[in-house]
Image (tube, rainbow, N blue to C red; front, side, top):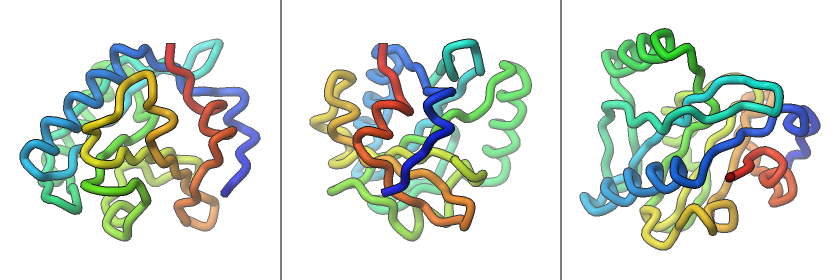
Length: 162
């Protein structure tokens, strides 16, 4: 597990209704027996990073992977510019347990040091806004370009659901 000091200053703050919308999107993908992807778009404020919207990019997906094609990435960049937001975290589902797979690393949208990737198990079937932090696995990209799992303590510092 990685200990992150900088996150104490900039937690991701998200309303429970936006977490619920995220999970609804992931469950719909799971009903098609495929992974889903949602990007939390936010803005930095005095208390941290406030998530403004859960954004579902056009993507290709199957049971064990997702990929956002080039045109959808261009659309995402345009949307970020128009809404003056940035990607605060990527959230995606897995068919079974939550972990960061090789394809997750290969196709990750956020690629900077400190980037946050949240993985929801079982296509989000049993995950709710109230148990979200207990169900997910969270990973942060290290300086060495390795996805490292966050401890439960770090996760509660990083994400605040209101």
